[in-house]
Image (tube, rainbow, N blue to C red; front, side, top):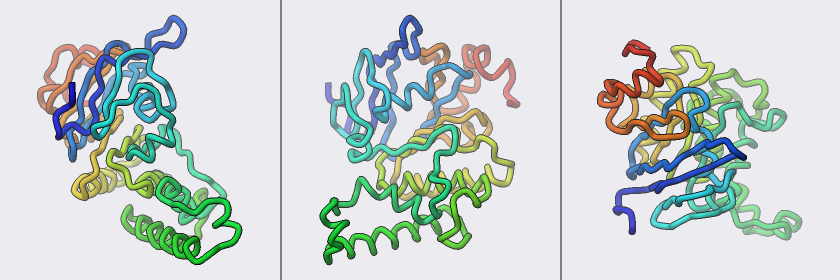
Length: 260
């Protein structure tokens, strides 16, 4: 069955196992074009495993997913990046000894055409593409609010700036879907407010956002819809207020209260 036209991502009965451990069990969900979709659940619930399946780091054992009208069963990460899925990770994975600008330029690789010959000969087309790449990287540094000199090494940025630099590098791939794995982890309250504003700006630009986050207050105040995983199964899905009140969610994740 073809997914509805407004469904950018559709997971159908996705399963993933590691030996005798079931990480995902019959998970089905859909993400609409242009929304911010939250994925929450206790540690070990399968959230990052789902990210790894969608981005090609893991191959699913059962089920399938459709992205932008294309069915995927098994696919490599670079092909999914070219298709329009970009992601960040729980732990910062920048090139520490490269500049902020260079980190973003690396993210442009799926959208560049210069091969080995062009890099060696530096013909006119290769030079023009490099200029465009540098210009786009500078624009993205400004877009995410990093005000340091562009040649500042990534390791010398503040923690919050490093998080935003990872988002800028993901945006450099020109994604249709931006998948963020705990982007607010370790941030203070001011940095979290700035992150929320950035994600709203990204959504307003037309990019769909899939968000894993343990900051439930951020999720509930930002996302259009939320899904909850527990032991690899989806136990709830809906608008934030519906999910917040769901007894299964309260028992599994929110600890019996709404103030988390």
